[in-house]
Length: 113
Length: 115
Image 1 (cartoon, helix red, strand yellow):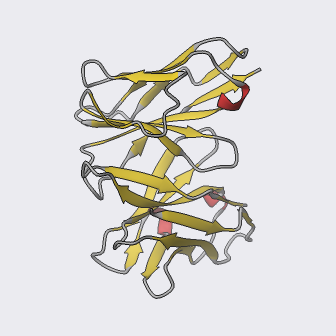
Image 2 (cartoon, rainbow over the protein chains, first blue to last red; image 1 turned 180 degrees about the vertical axis):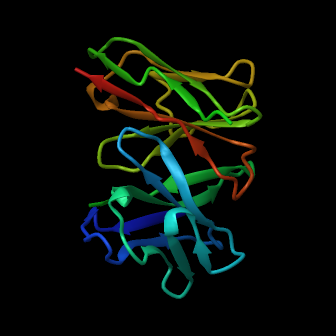
């Protein structure tokens, strides 16, 4: 079964500093991977997704993530943090049902302070 | 384009009471999902509909939870009777279709507190 592990439940950075949020996946098949952001009292919003087209994926708000098969990782980065980036970030892997439909399995989240 | 709508936003009940949540997906989205997000955890899929049919309900506690999407548009999730451990945020999401790589769009959620 597919799963993701997010290292660090909380990450603190200074404004202007590099943001690095870690995600490692486990999958027996080539994975499709997602990063979502959740602002306080709001639902989840898609930041970016990896669907095997390119290993470096650019998303909204200046975020990007690189798929590294050898390390089974899909870490999220942003060169310069902004106050508005404070939120909870979730990594997710797609798990296909026997029906052919999609099911997302989420990590436990990382709160960016 | 309107997003996924959910109501109520907050609900406080006592254990053993019943509660229902409503979700209206983005227009034209055939697939609808209900997730449970317990504090400090990631969302967990409870049930997935394709139009008005259930695709996956393997993690739905069927002895107390039920969900329906009668006309293939909006949906209702019910808990009867509620337990303390049901305290969580219940998120509804929708997508154009359930095939692989589709983006899911989430509503703001309903925060349930069971006392």
